[in-house]
Length: 119
Image (tube, rainbow, N blue to C red; front, side, top):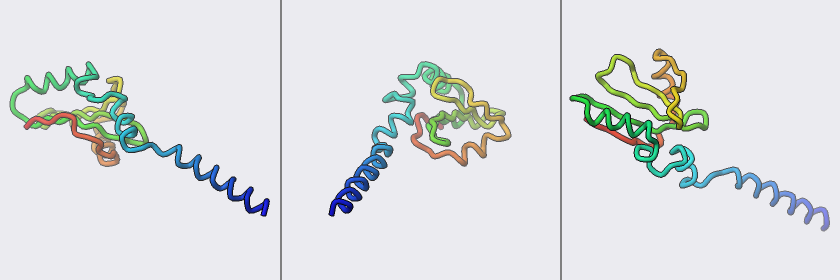
């Protein structure tokens, strides 16, 4: 009986440790939103990009928040631009993805939220 109780307690401890590692969806979205409630308003560098898009002429422009390999990234795209788009980390640093690899990165990423879109 003591062995059974010990195994049961050990199983409960192991199972409870696994559940702690899983984030609830609300926390996951906040973490993936660069730890801010509204990335467009709260990240100054991203706000500047959105303001540039607002002032630009015709064309489709989009800013997306994505997750790739467990990290959040922000993709900005202007459909009239010569390059396919840009990829940033939460601090506004370029992600170092070459233009030729942009579409592969985008396809491998999970969309979290469209932050901005202008048609």
